[in-house]
Every structure is written in C-alpha cells, then in structure tokens.
Amino acid sequence: MITVFQNKNFFKLFSGRMATNAGDSIYYVAAMWLVYELGGSAFYTGLAGFLTLIPQVLQFLTGPVIDRISIRKLLTFSQGLQAFMILSIPIAHSLGVLNVTIVLIVMPVISLLNQIAYPATSALIPVILPKEQLTKGNSLMSFAYQGVDMVFNAVTGLLITFFGAITLFWTDSVIFFLAALLYWRMTIGKEKNVAKEPAQEFSLKRETRQYMKDLKAGFQLVLGSAIVKLFGENIVANFALGAMMAILPAYADFRGGSEVYGALLAAFSAGVLVGSLCAPLFEKIPVGKITMISFLLGAGFWISSVFMPINWISVLLFGICSIPIGLTNVLFYTILQGCVPRKFLARVFSVIASISTSAMPLGSLAGGALGSLFPSNMVFLGAGFSFLFISLYIALVPVLRNLPSVKNATMEDFKFNQEILNGETVSS
Image 1: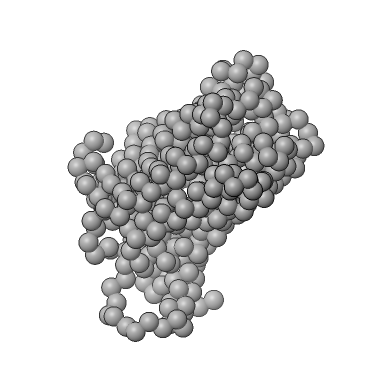
Image 2: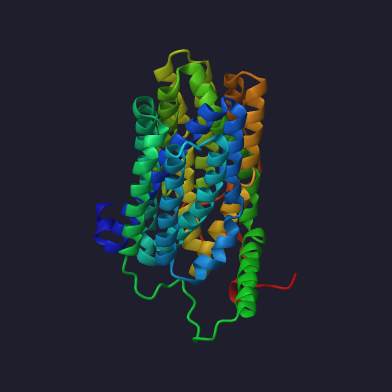
C-alpha cells in the first residue's frame, strides 16, 4: 500500500481527509455531549442527531456540481467555512449566550457543508489513481476516515472529562483550517471531472437547465440499475444506526459516563477500520457471500455486547460487530468506481448516499424518543437486530447474493441502462 503514497496528490488528499475526519470526530462527540448536558435528555440528542443527519438526504444535490467544477476548490471552501462555523459555539459561550438551541442550529449547517467533502473525495480517487490501485486507495482513505475517528472519538471522550466540550471547539477550528490548506495545495491541473465545454457567457437559465439534466441522469442511472436493490438493506441499517447514535450518550451514561461514550465510539470506528484495511484481502471472494456471512456474525457480537456486564469486554464486542461495515463499504465502493463511467461517479455516489441515509435522521428521532420512554440498553439492543436483517435480505435477493468479487465485477453486473450512459438522460 505504501507505493500509493508516491502519488503526491493522493498523499495530500489522504492527509486532508485525515484532518477533516479529526475535526469531524472532535466536533461530533463534543457537540452531542454538549447537547446532552445542556438539554438533559436523550430526546435532545435524538433531535441533534436528526438535524445533523437530515443534510445527508440532500447529498444528491451536490453530485452534478461536483461532476462539473473544480473539486479542489470545493473541498477548500467547505473546510474553511466549517472552521468559521465551529468557532461560533465557543464564541457564544464566551459571550454567555450559549444554549442548546444555538448548538442545534449550528450542527445541521456544518453537516450540510460536509455533504460536499465525502462524494467529492470519492469522485477524485479514480482521477488521481490508476484502476489497479483503487482498492488500496479506497482502503487507505477508509483508514483515514475510520482510523482517525477511532483515535479522536476515544481521546475526545477523555478530553471532555478533563477540559470540557467548549475548549475542544477552539482546537477543532484550527484542524479544519489545516484541512482546507491541504486540499488547496493539490495540483491536479485540468480536472477530468470538469466538463470540457467552450467558454460561454454565464446564463442562470442555461446553468439551471444543465444542472437539472445532470441531476436527472444520475437518478435514472441508479434507479434503473441493480444498485436499487441495495436500498432495502441500507435503509433499515441506517435507520438502526441513526437510533444507535442517538441513544449512545444515554447508554454510555448508563454504563459509566463520557469515558464509556468515547470508548464505544472509538471501538465502533476501530471495527470499521479493521474491516476497511482487510478489504484488499477479499478482492477475489464474491461480495454477496462476504456480506451475508459477515453481517450475520456482526449481529451476534452486537447483541452479545448488551448482555455483557464487564464494560471493557462489552466495548470490545461492540467494536467487532462493526467490522462488516468497513469491509463491505470498501468492496462496494471499489466495484462501483471500476464499473461506473467517470463522468457519473459523483452523481452516482451522492444519489446512493442520499437514498441510503434517508432513514438515518428518522432513526435518530426514533432512538431519542424511545430512549426517553424505555431503558437505553433495550433500545440499543433492538438496533443490533438490523445486522441480522441485512444478512437475511442479501440471502433472499438473487442479484445481491450473486454479486461477484471486486476482481471479476463488470458494468453488466449492475445492469446499467446503456441509453442513459450514452445520452445522459432518457425520456420519462
């Protein structure tokens, strides 16, 4: 994998992603705990999760933009603006006006800015890396995502105990400025995602028409292919994960406090990281079979973690249960990057992300509401059964059950509409 870092642009993208995720982890853990402290109820953490996750549903709107303009500039702008937004929380505290409402307003705005970063980096990887290095590149980018999350989720939980959440927001702003600088220093030249069209005088009507055309093509390509079969398990899984994240502060408080909260988040990220790093070892094994077996085992570990009275063993079991997420995410992303035409990549990824995560905000609301009515450990247990559903769903859907390995996957496996690929859109 080290040879991938010889590509200077990938190294800068990787470093920027690490800084971005360090900032995201510190902000999310500190903000959720701050909401729990200021609001004093699992309902407010559920509401915070809902408001934070809602922008993910709108991620499809960013696809046509990312496919047509400089990704480097988009990443730089989004990270710089996040840095300024995060500063508003400690400044409000210094002025003595901070309350739960202000935090609940800032959280979705920052989340909205994040919707640019993730599909943009995913679309940029196949631009700067050759096809034979895509699996390694995706695995390393997932490490930058989950590895940093693992470290900073744990560290942030401890730092909150010693310094409080407010102090961490000052540092977090600096980290986002660093990410913006790293993205800005990439030298890609003429980006291949940018449409090569003759210069024209700006016309809002023409640009809007082109944007809607690109947006429609992205939706048609995804919804008219076998990818649509993935949404059944993705929606249920994301609903459960949304509920889990909303109830986690209360569940951690039940088991010990902010230290346990940080440990649970870190363990979950560590499991995803392990799965991501192991993905290259499974390139020759059918993805359908890997998904079925791994999520069945994951369900067992999640459910077992709830009944384990010893905290460190419970945290370990919970971490192991998340390994299938990292493993299958890297494999699916690599398959799509190899099968989807480059000019559609950002649109396809953003549409998939929007539809797949559409249930997550509702799950967060449900988790917070149920957490105020029932014991947090019972809600946490219920969320664990989602992994069992994923395994059964894959087994019952032939096109998913028979998905080939990364090495053998072709465009035909996803049954893409050739008319859309050639002509961008088809009549509805």
